[in-house]
Amino acid sequence: MTATPAPSALLLVDGLRFARDTQPVFGPLAFAVDTGEALLVQGDNGAGKTTLLRVLAGLLPAEAGTVMIEGRPAGRALRAQAMAYLGHLPGLKADLSALENLEFLCGLHGRRAGQRPADAMAVTGLAGYEDAPLRQLSAGQKKRLSLARLWLSPAPLWLLDEPYANLDLDGITLVNRMISAHLRQGGAALVTTHGAYAAPPVRTRLLTLTAPLAEALA
Image 1 (cartoon, rainbow, N blue to C red):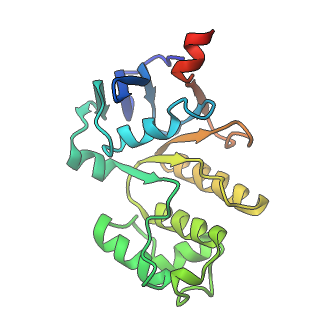
Image 2 (cartoon, helix red, strand yellow):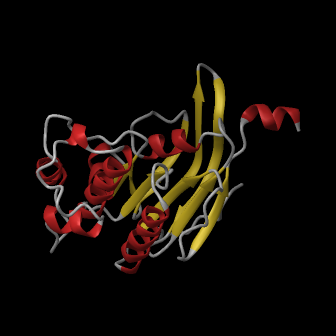
């Protein structure tokens, strides 16, 4: 599925393709994400949802196509400034405490104005776990700590790969509240999902990816 690009979009993608060992994974894709908007990326396993987010974040090289951020080519420095990526792995250090992890990442990537690591832990339901070593946290708590890191990021564009995984119903509600607040503040989000959860209650468009094998058999 191709969403209609908008010239003034925060993120503008055109002709984006990716292949692994000459095997097409997705594309060509053309879509846009505006400020105050979420793009829900759906598709079965193998359709390329995670790969798309990794290509957008600059973690994988595209085979072809262009990625623009606010009308500028998305080079490495601009992506690092404009995008916050939440993947399947927490991206945290096991030898640090929960609060030390957030302080380290704020020093590395910057911090949203008016927010402190301890405040973000409270927002994500981790108040009281500031000094807990990361290795002692459950999978759900580590996910919440990753969400706290996301909340602290000053990046306007969130790339969220299955953000509801390892979360209970309260955690799912938390993700939706965070996305809603981020969009109200002028941000945008790409959210991958298998479709098992309701979309966040925000202005949302849909991008559906189909696995190449499924297309060949259709």
